[in-house]
Image (cartoon, rainbow, N blue to C red; front, side):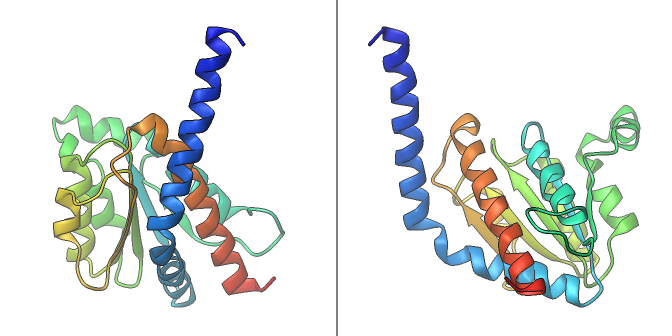
Length: 196
């Protein structure tokens, strides 16, 4: 085996270790999060997502899956990714309000009964914190999916909010696990709303 092949094998082994660790620590909050999504959708609410950097890919994937489908045809479910509108995002940033990139949109688009889904892969940024505060101001429930435990965001959550937190993984190691959890959540939402 070449040195490069050994490195690749090690990456696979590390991924499996992280997956096993996640399976032992984050199983219990996954169903309550899916239930929160289902309750918001059943009460005519929508799910609004936000994330920074590469985590925004996961936020968009989640919204695309709800709006279209994961594996089986079903009615579309309302979801909006605040990071998908590059024009609005850059306009807010242009006016030197980076910290308002999501909170300004939450205040405009969110309503009581909606749910804010925040995905964090590399620490907790001020714009995500302000989005959570804006969601609470709009009487929205908040769900956080995070690569890090015990963060500044955790202290902002209300008793009715939810957090799924991995064990302080770097973004590159967290990304596949966050995607796995997003897929689990989408499968559970489909099963709870449409059966199967």
